[in-house]
Image 1 (tube, rainbow, N blue to C red):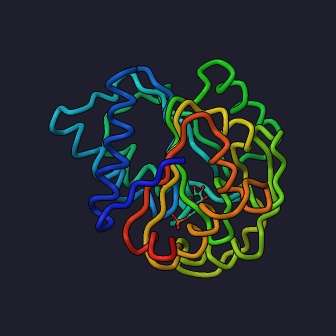
Image 2: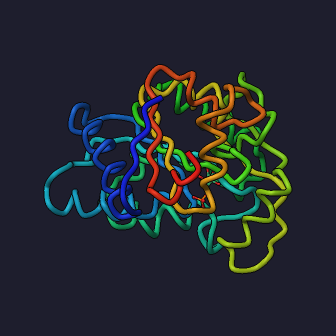
Length: 240
Ligand code: F6R
């Protein structure tokens, strides 16, 4: 896996955005999946700016959500839906049918998994996926120990993920489960961008690079994919 180190978060975000833009310019109806969370916020801003400047056209692009907290919807600050819409989708002019995103408020998580798997069967594989890295090495909500055979599924969240989640919600919320694309779907993507920023990610970034690929640290599995790259800023690369 190639590693690209940018001097700061801004340049990191622009480098990852360029990767997505190149993908869409080569294939206008590409299926793109970008994580929620804090890491890609600069990428969203760079992509919105690129569309404004006419450097990319998302009018044919399909967007797939990576994951969601079960029980949370768009009205919940810090949900994946709230973050991705407010920083990205609301700033582009997209048609509803261009977006497939988990409904965290669903009454039937299993049916929701089947719906999203059906969408992927129709539109997939994913052409470009941008993943953050959890403090425990999770990708999407594929926590340590996750099965490599999983497609969309419901997950009991790791205690570390539950603790970290407070930063999104501004307050402790009772989120015990998530719904996520599985490792099988993620690792089948044509192009995987693993992205991390800041000193707090330095240790897990070093583990991702140095440890053998195994589901004990899901981010290491990206190294087994056919085309994958790690994009980090200097701070996140500081333990490499
Ligand atoms: C969010 C997601 C998570 C995050 C990861 C890093 O949709 O899938 O895997 O990418 O937890 O979170 P941040 O970017 O907030 O550090």
